[in-house]
Length: 302
Image (tube, rainbow, N blue to C red; front, side, top):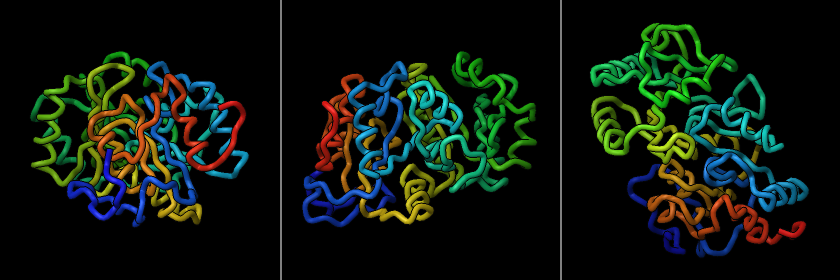
């Protein structure tokens, strides 16, 4: 876990941590931000009953909850709906933000056409055809002829796929991210290093709890879950210096370092655990529910 003092922010992060004398003491919180897979819900996509009750307690106390995820909006919404929850979110690791079910965005940070084309060229030179995530409320994915990602994910995309040539897409559409799901760890790390060395982009790597392997995404410089949180706070007139965040993966590190109080679940990655002030039990045990106690609230049999 990171030290209690916030006086030594990590050199590798662009997040600006809240200045607090003692980060182990919960501040007044204006917003709770949560990762989804492996954090709010378990590896099967289920939210624990304790976590459900905690969400209701926060709602009753008028504490807003924002999802921050590497998922596409429609993908996240489907799992939320199956669990009976509806949260606003920042998606694709912070590239876009939408209220639940909304077709308009409160935040968007896309690639320039030139940089999008540069990334696609590098990937295709490596024999890799990515999923191209674009800004569209309904059909938001463009695929090449042989997409380099898990086949079950391709099947599930179904009607979300646009009938568009990838090169036409990067030149004419608003590209938010390039993603690969379920890839081998060694290949992912090498590819992330190669692309970020040759193009002005950032890479986000997280464990793929649905398909196995790793989830790799490329996003515009300056985009992170934390940048999406800042946009949400601005839109809702919330204090970004009073944010509690919880996550479990490497793509949560900037989020955790930006928050005033950072939590990780016990089965989080080493980097996420190192960025956290406190560690909670995993999603399958309803560890998320302990947020209620940290905020000094009382809930129903948490």
